[in-house]
Image 1 (cartoon, rainbow, N blue to C red):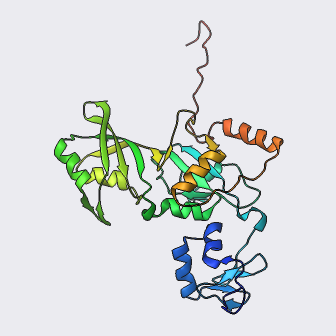
Image 2 (image 1 turned 90 degrees about the horizontal axis):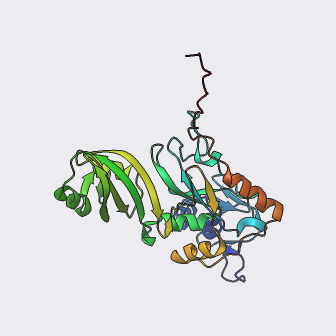
Amino acid sequence: MTDNPSNPVTGEKLQKVLARIGLGSRREIESWIEAGRISVNGQIASLGARVDSLDQILVDGRPVKRDIANEEARRVMLYNKPEGEVCTRDDPEGRPTVFDRLPRLKHGRWINIGRLDINTSGLLLFTTDGELANRLMHPSYQMDREYAVRVMGEVDEEMIERLKTGVMLDDGPARFTDIVTSGGEGINRWYHVCLMEGRNREVRRLWESQGVRVNRLKRVRFGPVFLGPELPVGRWREMKQNEIDALSQEVGLESVALPAMKTSEKEKMQRMARKPSMHQARTVRRTKVPHGRK
């Protein structure tokens, strides 16, 4: 660890390394350092400390596992989440999770970029780069989310204007940045709405504040990333190098080359990506009834 001005500056800033691993945002980790929660080589770390591959890092007394060879890897996964899955790694109620379907990593872990509640379907992003995840979720980078939503109830122009201007929810003011009508019949109407943040059940709560109920909700875009028809419900695909580079550029990160992958590994990933979700309802095949039976 180097934090002495008289010594040559080597290594990377401690908060940058821990953010990249996915332990938190740089600002969060800086607050941990100021609170004395992080030590390096047995000494309480200070702001400005730098670390290299030989340094031992502890957070709250627990060692941080680092895989230097794969720490710089930046992979991004798109997943079309079905309803009925939760966005946690392990669910105490035994419900299926979005991580059940993702391919397992030999090194590192998938970090989800935002969440969707159990009754919401659509686009989820995952990455192996904690810094990319933190920047995409941070309000300062203005990553808007777009949803297709079906509401039940009477909706008029005054209500739409209120939802765009802003209403008070139990956790503070909230609003849609845009609302576009997209069809439907009777009291069930479809809209596309955009939000600049991702608070818990915010889309549903905004509509419910106006006395209407959401009965279908699907995320179709996160920032510059759209959910396309090539990704059916319950399937995933990895972003290509040019897609990851464009996404990284949106939040001010330099490009990182994708790790090399053997042909056999690529073929295995492709086979896995084509498999249907184990949690989707399967179509029941009707058995033909022989003549004479009822």
